Image 1 (cartoon, rainbow, N blue to C red):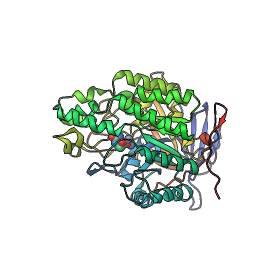
Image 2 (image 1 turned 120 degrees about the vertical axis):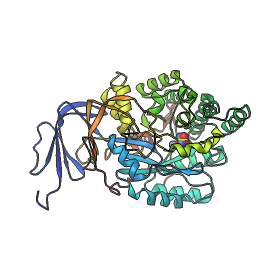
Image 3 (image 1 turned 90 degrees about the vertical axis):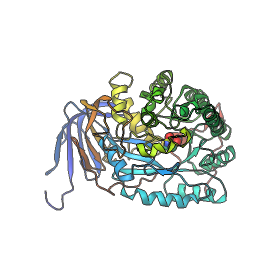
Image 4 (image 1 turned 180 degrees about the vertical axis):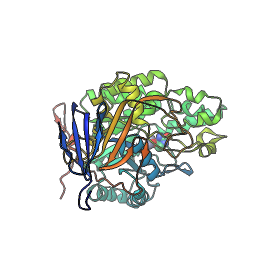
Length: 486
Ligand code: URP
Ligand code: ZN
Ligand code: ZN
């Protein structure tokens, strides 16, 4: 290849899958973008040619909920932006939306700049939701700067984690109204933090000290109450909302009711909540049980079945991981008291294969529904579509070639994640990536990870996403829209 030639790759003879359907064809990548999609494309001189016969060709996954190197509960998540986005690429995910979480009282703009610095080592593209953990005039102003000048169109609210990052109703209301002015989307961790606090004390006083105390202190009702409260506050104010990591029928019910009433409510589900149940907390091996301490906790099988139905019916639109890794020695900080076990589990590498195996192979989801739930819906809701989440000329060449018959047994011995265990250990998944392209770079090639530290780029996400901002009517009544800018 001459010095001047732009690198190109022709992916030939695969089944191209998008959220809208499937077709046989070729896909040409030139430089960082998709150049053409269609039948019998010509390979440019010097192009790499990949035979995708028998494989699916899909938009790279978007994980809309990760926490790389998050300082949390007295420690720091073990996965950094380079290792985490590399592991993501090995699993077919080419973009992560992570979270800036300011300490209460900290300027949110300052926290944002800190996270931007940490993320410079990312191997694949990324963006940030910004958490609102407190309220004053500076938060209001900084939300404006972030939305108008820094490409942030979603703000996160933790309704749990009292005495740390929890957001009370006053802050929720202030922030929702500000989001409305800016055309940004409020997102929520829905658990009633006051109830969790009281229940944790009761459970501890009753003698439960180990990981089994964790789910007892965070029952589904606690999540359902918070989801319903956030949704009703949003209804009164006329703002859309997005509920993260929906784990139970109670929260799903709140989302479903609101959607059936025409309210703009979006729901995310984690791959692990779909396939792992609460029996993990009854393991007599302390470490093994503590590995699964995350919030909301794993639920019973009935809740899992409800979540699958919610995903199939489109009541839940996105799938994520909440990738927040703490190694076994970190988890042991809570050896004497379950309340001190750092909350979080990993899975950014395994989300797509787990969803393919348990969703598509089992017949619950079509390949197109899989693409919608792993990529396109997140791109639409967070307003990066069709640059991301689509196979169209001009889109970023974030592409995965997927072999539906390739089998893998998930294990910490072979994964790329920077954590000493894997919550899916021993699970066989049929359907795995063979090639991943991140903005045209061939970052995963048949088992070889070739990510480059710092190659990922920050993705701006403008406000007023057409996917949801256009719909402002409910029951014939105009919703109060964003105030005019000027
Ligand atoms: O347990 C969890 N989910 N840890 C990460 C922080 C959060 O709540 O998303
Ligand atoms: Zn959360
Ligand atoms: Zn999270």
